[in-house]
Length: 235
Image 1 (cartoon, rainbow, N blue to C red):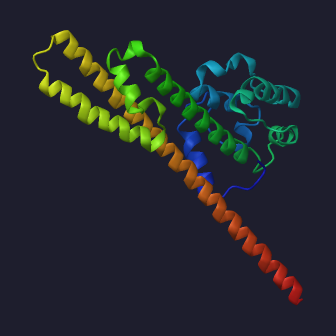
Image 2 (image 1 turned 90 degrees about the vertical axis):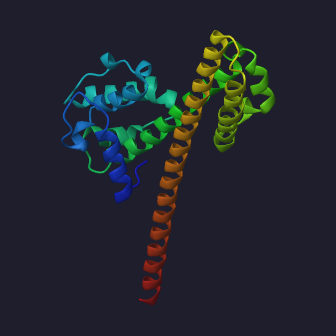
Image 3 (image 1 turned 45 degrees about the vertical axis):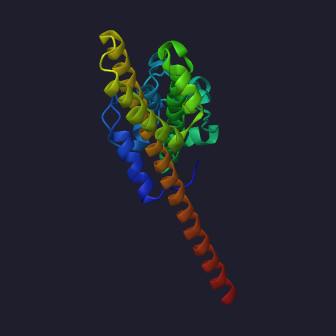
């Protein structure tokens, strides 16, 4: 968590934080996040029920800052499978340069993962409840939609929405208007789920891109280390 971030990672982090409405003006990230309050607000922005802001008091004193971060670790970060070590917290609360950025970057990744899990669970719940699909639940189950993930789900949803549902609406114009309206609502629901899957895929692509950037950085540092060793051997 203490590793130095690349310029690309820092730009992504600052852009991410700038999009989040916070209670105080953003001036200097090292000081802004030292007492943990704005960090709590970041998490609350994405998971309102996970954070009670009354537990975090704006502070300049070291004891109150430390208390805020300990509450964050215990009550909030633990639910994101995340933890900020005490040693790192001590550096954050005294505004040590370059410490808060890797913490926020790691928190960003944990939040993205939690959001994906939440949306995935919502999709499973939507497809697993036969009352929400009526007679079409059997068709969804037999088509394998409720067991798919990622591109597979997106393709199956697209096939189901664009082929099956449209076919029914096109050739059954003499059906009861109430039934027809219900089918149209279900088609819209399937299309909304398809859009959700596409959003999740974009997040996966972003994480893969960040991982690629980290791999490139590791390779650069490894080459630099080998070059330094070679120079030392020659000397």
